[in-house]
Length: 624
Ligand code: M6R
Image (tube, rainbow, N blue to C red):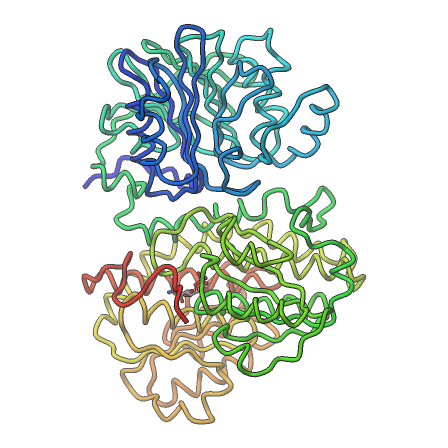
């Protein structure tokens, strides 16, 4: 397989867009394209088709098959040879039919589909309501339709350019207008959009699989561009209307590779989507003066001030994110935190009261153990917050406060990007609580906030370690025993490294607090054992290096993951040092997880294992 290009750092991780213009029935091409985007995950879908000065639309919660059943059941007629379709992964508003795309202006003249998040939608909505617009959904997207209505005298491409200028955040749009037959206009700012060039027909999509069955000629819509797609032409302009030369490429991927964005597996794709997952999770949540903003989550100032203790409940990888959250909440917000495995929580009679905040962390939002724990907490009168990747999940519905990670659907069974997104959001929560409770000023929080802001870039840097981790995986393909050690915030990072190795590569791996090794497990250290040490916490580096030298002295092979500044010192007690970008606050431990994910991934791949669906595991664990 030859991969021609990969749009790194701008991977599409949320909704799916398809547009079609040509001689064939648009409904078939749109439904087919949406079905090809199903791998991205979604909760609802819809399409709008134009013909003879009319727009017809249908939206449906559930699967593409449910949408197709409505389109084809004869009760609705969907002729027409141009239109737009969408699969929605809810970010603003529950997964309901009114919130499904396309969205419309007041007159039904404009139908719009969107991938991304409009950060300033609340202000725009208020402004539009002031001008008499009525809204039919809870989405951020709908403001774009009404903005275009405001500009009804402008050519559609110009109106879309104006929308891109006025909307902050990430947008990929596809729009049709009743008065512009045979035209689909796309706009890109921060979210990917590609064009498929057919013969006498053209496609617009958020990802290549939507049209690969029909054409392999494609163009990437560049950032801050508008594209006018007609059956026989494609015209790209910048936001001031100046025409740009389109650059055509050939796709050499097969369908399966295209779904994975050119990566061999979903797991690797998702590891590489981590910078984007963090960027989307933080989008709109850091204000102009650097203040964390968690508006709309239910976490108001009164609740933040009132909390006297936090309990975190979670399982598996989410539990490790919870352990990291403890450091953020205790260090910054000075709130006492207990972290429990969900499956243990309610059986130890935790002492809860109305001032207790119980944070349930679950990427799926459906984990039975975590649901049981938060239901118990609610029953005891505690406040419940959910940190989940799935809007409308059972956990979100049980919670008073919903903090959504926006990692996009995670298809690989082993968690990767949802974990990194959880950690970013929980650190932001720690800083938000610190400021709300008067423990830190916004100025004092600016260091950690800036570290969070730079996390996507730092993650891109650590992804560059993939080849080194492949080399190590090859070197240690037959090693039977691995240890992962850390102290403080590096301890959960070590636990996560060990879990990834167990579940992906089926290798026995122990995660330990480094200081605990001498109390027993050190008996297992002998030549042939590999020890990964995570040593990003500079306050503890001397102690950590001492602990690692104890492993080396007993014949263990020691690999230390450490900030660049400490490489020299780490080298003394290590066989190998993996340098990480130097960074502030609690970010180093987050970065350390990525090479560990890559090591496990490569070792599993070398062994020929199914990394997307490891044996005995399920993506959503709905039994206790
Ligand atoms: O959906 P959740 O985050 O609640 O899932 C929790 C665990 O089941 C999950 O993290 C599991 O440990 C994964 N296999 C980790 O890769």
